[in-house]
Image (tube, rainbow, N blue to C red; front, side, top):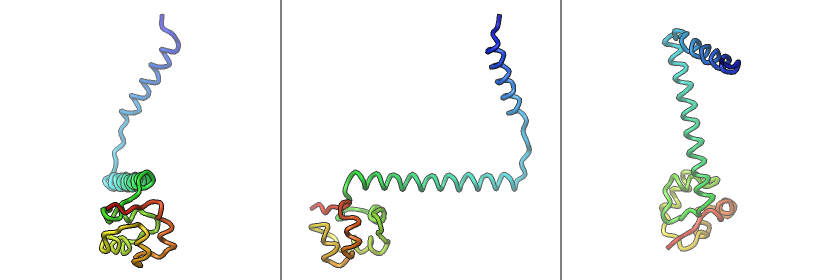
Length: 121
């Protein structure tokens, strides 16, 4: 003898299967719009993941000013493209505070990243 729970589960499964069989035709324009929306979401998600990785990397390990890539330097708070390029051009560094003494960054901007950078020899 079968239980009412079994009949309910079977009915739900049957309805789910039938719902999946009713296929609506999509116009090419609708398909393009949905594809564009999905692509935009995926792109946004990828950016969020990349930013999360950058933040996690910076939080756990100081960035070496003597070896960091431009993208790694750009992940530092407030770092601009021009500043990252100047950091790379002025290598090597003996001390992270060289960024201030060599006039690459003002003290106020250096203070934002001081605990996130190092200068390994």
